Amino acid sequence: MSELVQFVVLQRSEKWVVKSRELERAFGDRRKAIHCAVELANESGKNGKPALVLAGSRRHEFAPVWTFGKDPYPLARSVSRRLAKIERPKINGSKINGSKINGSKTDRPSHRVG
Image (cartoon, rainbow, N blue to C red):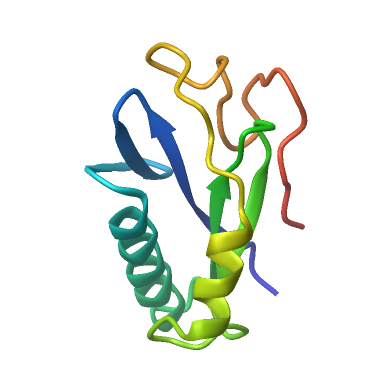
């Protein structure tokens, strides 16, 4: 099985950001960022690259909110309920305590796939 492409939703300053590899898109609110991440992950999956959407929490951890081939597309109520349970990070300057994605240095461990 091929490695899952990660689409990460996190808060930077007053914006919500969707980040994956070379891609980075900013949004005014969390819900729009998550919906965009799910759309991008779904397209990636349809193109043969299975994908996962992760959302940042206050504890600087990333929780899965949608997985290609596992969760319904478009988003269903089950996903919306899961999104509502995930803690939203507090704003701390322009970044979330230096947390980085995909194997870069972090203050705390991040969710890893594979």
